[in-house]
Length: 359
Image (cartoon, rainbow, N blue to C red; front, side):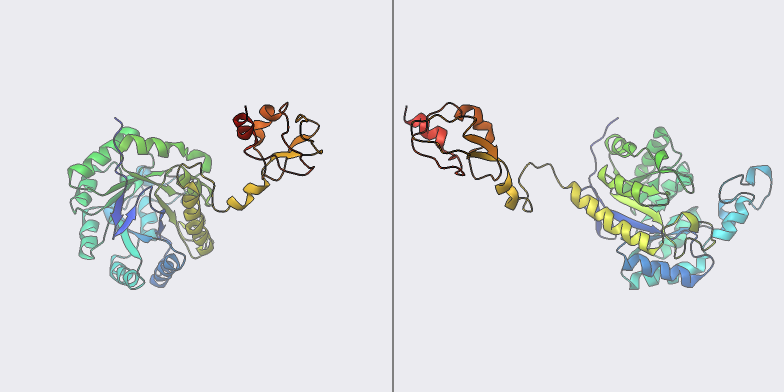
């Protein structure tokens, strides 16, 4: 059922919605590559290039899966082929004792920081750090108890929707709302790493806005910024992108993440796209007003004596635009001149009104 759009939400005092510039989230994910200093530097980069927030992922291998190499737990194909889920998350996870220094560093740099919790103990840790919001990852969008637990904090909630059906998205939203969440956004997402632009079907963003009545954004796993910028034109209010210091760094997520110059381009171009969308207007813009004089208008191209008729031989539509508008050409042709006109003279804009007044 189509619902009225809740046009905005807030995270840490920053308004987010169609009437506000895109909220760019720098996803740190596993791109710390086991080094706290690298994680700190990514926060610095996010601040320096104008991202609105940096986001972590909060889990331990044993809170997200089992230490098993059974068939169900092995990854086949893609970036992490041959690893077990436990091995992947052991490689990728961020030590929990890093969270406090990362939160403190982000606050010193005056950039919002929050995280994706992957179980209730992660929510508890983040609550101790006074996280201003929570993000539910696409793979957890079907974990309604986790959504309800995060939502029970009454903090803003952002839910990624990769792989989720429309019904599952609706269930996730209902779970969040039923547990007390009032500031809610969903992110259109394709959970491929990397994802292909042609799989994003960005027109879905408009349908999500109309159908679910919440703020909508994009979690983008493509390798460039084209998809993210296009999403802004379709109404995305949030853009989330993985960020790394070096795409060739060898970490789990490096290869499909933006390097600093790419994140700078994203923050700049997303805002430029949002500004370009503007509003519905047919007014002459300030930048084009001086050029109005170069539009076409009607000019005398051969001398016309008083009593002579205006004709295609002595009147033409040419530039500049100081004369009568070309739309009056047919009405002018055949009329009798009431005075002499020189070649190169604009046809007076009031000539037809003056002619009618004399009748």
